[in-house]
Image (tube, rainbow, N blue to C red; front, top):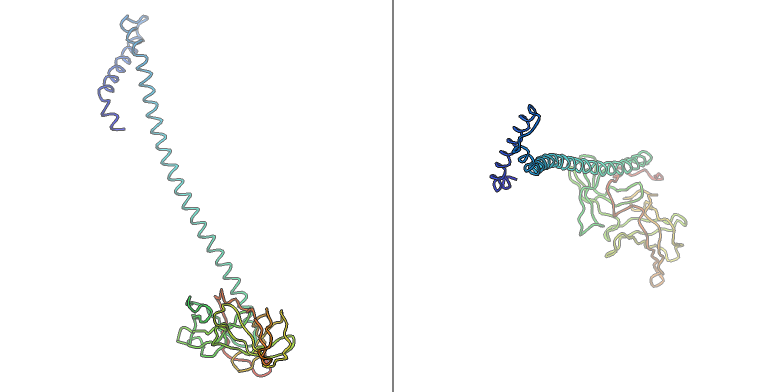
Length: 280
């Protein structure tokens, strides 16, 4: 805009002088009934200039108003985008709080109904290279935790503590090949040992002590309580595949875990096993 005024300074100045003359003529003409000849001719000549100057002034005024409105629109658009972003963050937080509330409620209900004392803990660390082997909890010795304590969720058995500090505990998951738990077919009461599988993530395998164990796809496997580490009756998983007896001596079955090892977040640590004959 400044460049336009610099380039047309003379033209604008001349137009301004003409406009002043026209204004003066209009003022003096109000006191006379007839315009002088030169005033008439000047008015005729200047009519296009007056229209142009009026249009120019009107256009500049409209441009200035439009520029101001554009700035207001941009500011309002920025504000609305920020508000929308804030609402989206609140929506995500609300969903997270709701999911957390549901998990904690289920955990609290289970803790209240359990026949043994437990401590609630949250998973705070997990190694991608050992995702189905180890997790670290945010509770430790200061909360009463110790080695070999069972770890469960409302859905089922998770594993046991293998290392503890004052503020953390490391859990060996049931899915790890080095782990193991006594298992029981709930329908037939056949017993075996539940093991993790090397190279297979998210799956368990039960090895039966007797080759004539009665096992079928869909059977529920629970903890037997044998071994003294895990309490009896905790859900372990469901049979998805039955394998033939190996050399006619041992029978195996594939088991889908009851606990959601893929999304472990909140767990319960059993701090004291029930007395003989007890159970959940």
